[in-house]
Image 1 (cartoon, rainbow, N blue to C red):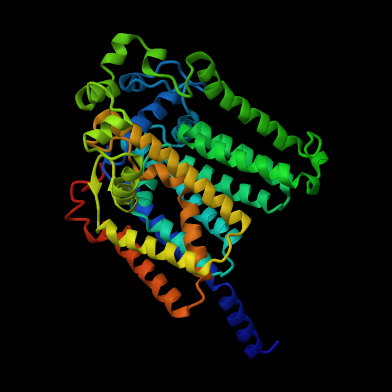
Image 2 (cartoon, helix red, strand yellow; image 1 turned 90 degrees about the vertical axis):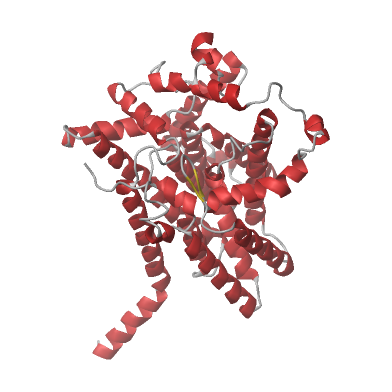
Length: 466
């Protein structure tokens, strides 16, 4: 083989796999940001990190789930009767770390768990790419959801902390991937079983994933009934996939042992403080104190809220919720807050993109329709939860409104966004819109940490590590 032929072959392969190289660059930059934040952000800055870290440390002394954990009692929660798998995993990781670094300091333990958490987010980024590949044909536009996710400020910030959001987001996202594969009848039975296992794991990590599991199950059942003549039902046997069937039964049973037993015993998916602790303990718990200090003497009804000038649900969504949610997705909302640029720019871009979708997409394919239904349903559950909180606290503060709560399905939104651009036939409009999107996400993304390291974030970061 001549040198010219080798050179041409190498060049051809580089061109063919250049999008993979760009994916690696995006992932490498994201990894750099999360590691930088993991070793530099002060303790207690990232949302609820102190609580998650303390619970994880407490579980290192046992392989089970203790009935009473001091810090959980202080806030009026029971770890055993809620989603506990994330804490159990972190405790095992701490046990493993102690074997090699028995004299590790508190700070070293924290940074180590932050890196473990970041691993889940790195996985989410990769899964986002594979999910996009199932919907988007253009190899370059398949990278757009990945770019948007890795430049979503709150996602990057959250990825560097100890919490149960990161593993829950990862398992939710990868469950969506296998769910989509099953709907496309790519090894239907096996992908269905894997999806059930993954979504069950996500529910055991964070109970707020339950609505996602519900809507996915409803769609799957409808799809199965409709496509039953085409599906080999005989494959739904233990002998066909024994290992997967055992895991399905195990994780379904574990979910029932938590949520099913809560419903039977306490008539609720998660128990209230008084269901597990004494009245005296609950009265001084953190959530109870917050309720006493901030809540109205009597919870508003929708009618009463409307009569006194507060928004009814429809106006709440369009006048407040959408903008507030975007603020908390593309900005930072936790123990510290930071909103880099006006959310109006993101909102205008979203509305423009939706307009392009209505103009150029003639018909939604089945998989995209299912993803859209899942996203809308999950968003409506969040809206209902947020509005209920507003009725309790009198529309004075968005107590339960956090951008991170939408992250289990945010990959859906970004994938649909990329699909819309793929369908825009006008090259000038498509290219100019994509360039604006890239510029906006880049300018409002984690580059802000570098730009304002010694100014806006001066009191967020460690000046030196002990």
